[in-house]
Amino acid sequence: MAYKCFDVDLCEKVAHIRLKRPEAFNSIVPEFWTELPEIVHGFDAGGEARAIVISSTGKHFTAGMDLAVFGSDANGPEDRGERGRTRAELRRRILHLQDSFTCLDKARVPVLAAVQGGCIGGGVDLISACDMRYCSEDAFFCIQEINIGMTADVGTFPRLPHILPQGLVRELAYTGRRLYAQEARDSGLVNCVYESHEALIDGVVAKAAEIAARSPLAVWGSKEMLNYARDHTIADGLDYIATWQTGMFTPDDMVESFKAKKEGRDANYADLLPDRNKL
Image (cartoon, rainbow, N blue to C red; front, top):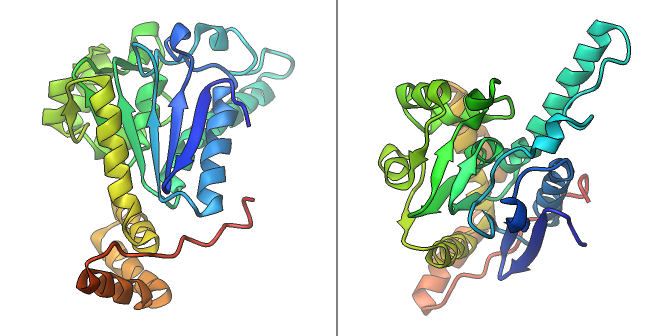
């Protein structure tokens, strides 16, 4: 299927989603909000992808929300009637935009972001919902919303404080300054800085392939536990993982792992079953 904002492929269990509007600095247009969750839900439901890479093209990862969106009905209803109903509809639409990134958090497989150039505004919301982030030396990150007189509302503030120190998040949020690649690495926003865009893509795809070689059920369980522990107490996390293991753990993948190691070959794990509720 052809998309306005993305090119998509699946190779050796790694799904690759590329922003493809470099002439517009990959700005986020209305179609973005429906295309991204459709693509992610498709890979998540199918069960064949074991990791997802989100990368981009051109000079910048994304310039954030396209200005045309702010002047269109896509970002909120015009005053067409009673104020309370109009505001309630706007809230519903903001929640819809949030869900477009929450799908990354809820996917059964890890999502890796590869950032070159500017990752601005909505781009920060996007990468905050990914499992891991990597960037090239020319990358920078900016909570741009404060610079245009609004509060970021699509995921940055609920997620970023779980990735970066509170003081740094607040500084970035209040000032709108740029966080450049090396500081992003030092503060833990990105796992690694690559010297070029090409090296970045090669490195992140290789990392995704490394994940894809592991048991997909064990990886899914690990992501589920990490997300649950992030959002709950330690006691809740311990209780949940006990319940998960009771229901989900079987020795098949472990037996295959030991057998493959003994025989000097790569392990061969079954894919996750398709999620027929999403297909």
